[in-house]
Length: 433
Image (cartoon, rainbow, N blue to C red; front, side, top):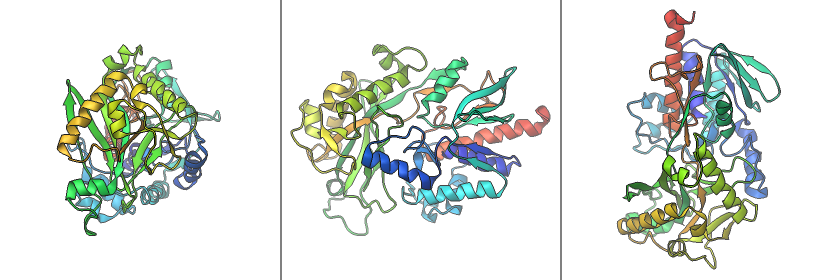
């Protein structure tokens, strides 16, 4: 993903050779697996909307807005993207966006840069174990049995690589539970959102598809829109068979007839502990339970459980569903009874508040689709403040969204750069020569 690739680019700047190991496929080959999810309901656990070249960001939208302004050089990240094929508009737009149809080419160009300057990128290679010696990293073991030796390993595996959390737990490495957000995708006709925001239907041809951002607090808990995709699509984001997860994306022109957004509630460790999930990986187990329930509700397919919005709010199963952008198809289901009741009640209260802010937002023309559960990692892999290494394993650098230190393309890229900067300083200071 962006953390790994931008770490690799930073290595080249610092005179270090990066070797990138990716469990998935290159962007072109990934397309076949995305087609298999969309059309056949088949999930390849190593190549999907989350795993593969460019990570989750490649096919999930390309929104570049971030609040991580104190953590690194945002402009440097944007310039690199422009140098590799993104439009120059992203350098000046308040909410820059590349588009899921443009990002694969940008990502492939970044790989070409890495390889042309001496780095290596290897696909279809899943890490299954660490090579450790006297509290020091010595490399990694791959799923084909090969051992790759290195004195420094950047662990930039994304928020859905649950096997990596299991591996860290097996070695009793320090991790901590981290809050995340859970909910549904909400989808409206784009024309309805245009009319609410612009007072125009149809909107003026010079205006972009209207977006929105909504948030409120219910009994001290945040309820908010997440990853809003004007003119976008809802896509299946499952990473393993037996689970159903959805996400949103949009192409560069944002010309779909639909607008979708995550509609999520902040979840704290105490919330999943009440559900009986204890320990550092309790949040992961909590996610898995709900994703499994959604898959069962779908009849063990990629058809997503859905409900008209007002029916959802009133606790009533929908007798029919409107058209949707979700290609595998929808099926009417009582989402209100599948979500944990505390989360459901907060979503309903939050929606009532949103309806006051956007007149017309609450309508049965809109649907909610389940489940939106991969907003961020529910785990943080500990690292030291100064060196950014893991405190127990010298040379191991937890990084990016999967390690719990980023939330989006730009913040993940910045974290990749930060980690390599810290790594290089340690090497060239003489402490590791």
